[in-house]
Amino acid sequence: MNGMLYVYKSMPNKLQHSWRTNIIFMLMLIMLAALFFSRALLSISMMAFVAVSFLHADSKGQFRQFFSSPLLWGMSLLFFIPLLTGLWSNDKTQWLAILQIKLPLLFLPLAFAGPMPFSKKQWYWVAYFFIALITGATLCCVINYIPDAASVNVGYLKAKSMITPLENDHVRFSWMVSVSILLAGWIWIREREKQKIRTWILLIVTIWLIIFLHILAARTGLFSFYIIVLMLAFWLVLKKIKWQYGIALLFLLILLPVTAYFTIPTFHNRVKYIVYEFDYFKQANYQPGSNDGMRIISLKAGWNSMQQQPVTGVGFGDIGTGSKQWYSANYPQMIEADKILPSSEWMMYGAGAGIPGIILFTAIMLIPFFIAIKNKLLWWMLNETAAFSFLFDIGLEVQFGVFIYAFIVLWWWKWLKTEKI
Image 1 (cartoon, one colour):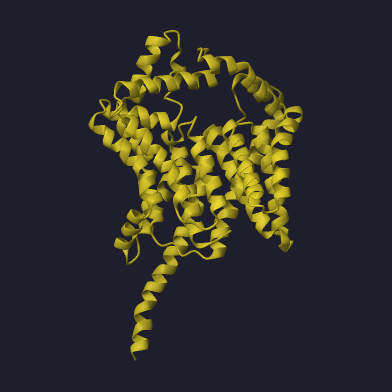
Image 2: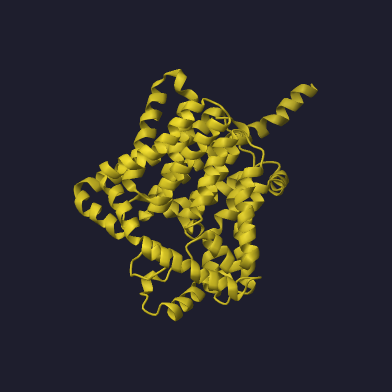
């Protein structure tokens, strides 16, 4: 009798667990698809994802999981640091706009703290769907590129790139391509001996994405890819695990860019432009439309803001205003379009929250390397590229960048806690 009563009471919880898990699974797929099709759908699906994550009997346990997981509360600090600086930010409108963009850094860690008892098959389906979306997007890029290839190639000599998804955000898109290469390549390595059609498709997709990354020639994606290759090569050599493969990968680090330079026009022109712009980069000279030169100048603007208030920073709401004032004083000839924010997340947190902001941001970027997780090499490679991308980019100041970073890192964290791929 008691056994029957236990089964009766447990059935609602199991049914709730089942439908909740399936809805979360579907919302994860919808969020990934919405990245490429609709900002509105992305916002709606993310809010639904967060809400459904709390629909279970142990909401208090979800908060306990959040506060006991350094990765989760650490990522949320990337929201709370700018929030705190509102106490001394003069431009409250800009401050609120920045906080709105950074909301996923608060809500997604809270959501991923909840139970997500996906099956191994479901986790792999999320991975395959992600790879398929990225692969399809790269094919669309090439289809749009081919009819106008000559003029696009010339554009690469002027700091321009081919049209990409994410509303032409080639920086974030290129990082996602490098993550797809890492994921597809890793799964292929793990399953290649099964000799299934899926493994051959994964191999073809991995090769294609590597080729495309060199066609796109966006430095964030390329450097991320080569960081992955370098880390894997050293891991194989130092751990004496098929060290011959490690040597081959080191050779690939030289062969690939050389081959791309002589065979891919966009890559060739990108290298030529980087060489041409090197003097502006080195001397931080201003040239209208200069990419690398402006990055260095913007870092100086951020450094100036941090020096004004080294303990607290100027507040996130006033970074833009302070930078423009510094540009006007030091580069009066600068056009308005070139008056950009400091081109590094480290400097953004330094300018907005002072030296403590830089220290905290560095600590948050290091947390993933000190948490217990299955398959550390795969996890480290992902987070190494994510941290590197913030060194010369402000991906956490744009909607797509905030979501992509938070979602991918948390997705992998949740997955690799339960499965070793």
